[in-house]
Image 1 (cartoon, rainbow, N blue to C red):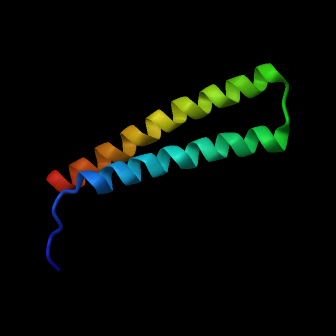
Image 2: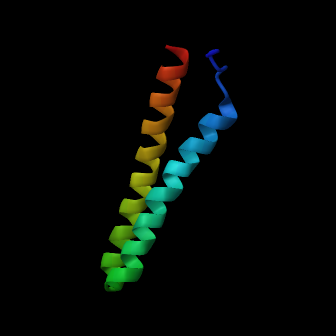
Length: 68
């Protein structure tokens, strides 16, 4: 198998995909639990922080794997 080149597009797509998955989970929690406004805000903020962390983890792992 030939080694693939590093693709910035693939990196962005996967990092944003991870962020969308985390935000979808936070949205699903809010819809299912139907918490009060304050609790929903905390869940939403945790979702945003989780999305940022997921993007960082995915991009770091991909970059280390592709570039060594």
